[in-house]
Length: 262
Image (cartoon, rainbow, N blue to C red; front, side, top):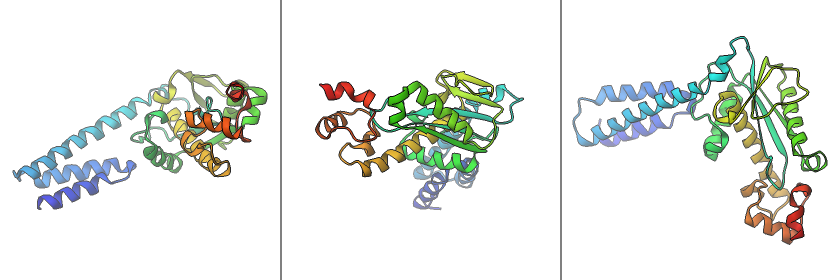
């Protein structure tokens, strides 16, 4: 095999989907075994890259398994739902929550707090989660509810919605940083849980992608505010648009009062 063919094969292996990590690892090992007797410099360089990639795959799988600590801590709980929210701070749009039950022991490479994952990989992870989850539920409250009842009520009510929308009753809830009142299911609050629990991380990804897609639609419905880029947060351009155009129906009046008064 010449160097161009080997590089092309290496690229093809790296293009495998996230959940094919075992197949990717096996293909890399096979590529190394078939070519390790070839001492040409270019071949050696590609094989070194392949070995490093195997190490990075192994490290990533180990990292994700480490995020199963809380899922493994409660062996009596068969259905464990992770719950997270997105959208507490924006000037516009809903607060949105997700609840996700993953199969126990399922390893999803690159699964992490949504804020630590690129947009491209969030989209891929979203599809992987929805394809593999035991159940997914989403809850939401609009700007009007936030203005009327406050963000704390809106957030926790959206979490209760997400639990109901799972369609099954979890044995345990793992929640990022808060306790959800009026829920008769055992729950554990974990500070920075979206970086410590695979279930909460999965909920974080689902909530973020779902809300971002909604804000893309709002950008078309209410042009001029840049919702497709700022997803409702108070960027300089968004604030300037608010002062120029005034608020639209999805703006949180309780959040923008001071801005409009300036």
